[in-house]
Length: 412
Image (cartoon, rainbow, N blue to C red; front, side, top):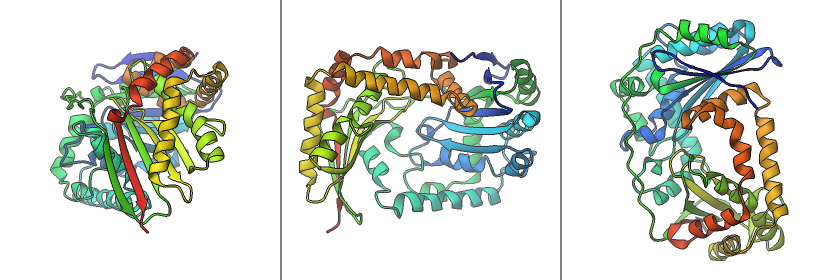
């Protein structure tokens, strides 16, 4: 059980804290409630661009990384379709430097054409390397465009195309920052060897003076229910054919979320899982296969993906996957099979929350989607999933009218 303290500052910044005296380090995790889903369809990639810009210098601090390194700390950031997340770890005696650094770039970045140009080039180069010039790199764009027709999940975090970042102006960048990077649109999670009293004192000192901003309520287009199968076939210069079958699933707060998560592991977690045992080891349909879910806050995706074994056609591979999905809809899952997956989740949860930095990241996310204390109930939610619930959810989900299929063919 993780003990959690909390406070909301007058400017709207939410603070969650958990003390861990087993380490001499402190972690600060700042989660901003902005991701790729908050971008304009013609100006995508901005949230990811800001992940880079936030290290390019703030109003009083020209070189963020230099101060972190001199204080014996480490830092990084990541962005997805829902959130932008920054973290820094420091020795406890230097922790105030972390509050100073993070508060200054929340206050304002050092906006300049030079900084924008540098980071814009970095992001464009990343787009080219990961998505345009790497084998299978465009699958994310193809799948999302197939699955989502209205919702902004239809583009990945990197953006729709490089031109959206190439054409970004300084005024557009400033506008994006002041609309979203605000204390009343952020959560500060602090963990490690620091008391709640010291955390509050430093948070008030460094974050308290930052004014709240006019953050508009999120009003995203609703994705309509898919009513017919969608298919796309492409040819690329890749080693082997790949199959992607994607089904719509519930949002992160829906009670069925944990059912979907467990179904994905029943299918592909470990050598004894269904897809790997039957379609890789026994029947040799795939060289590799995986099932997983998007952990997105809004209604997400359930993926079944695989690279085909030699001599197998995409049609044969798809038929084999449907057979396994039908079995999940009709067969009763043995208690031993279910218990193995539940035990795995419990051990993962325990090990994940041993590390003080993981705790900071997890607390911030749970605070965003509900309250940080919910982290203590995750294992119980997985434990409560029954074989009957899995069968019911599978019957609703694994139907052709809810499926988008990508045939990713190797050029002959």
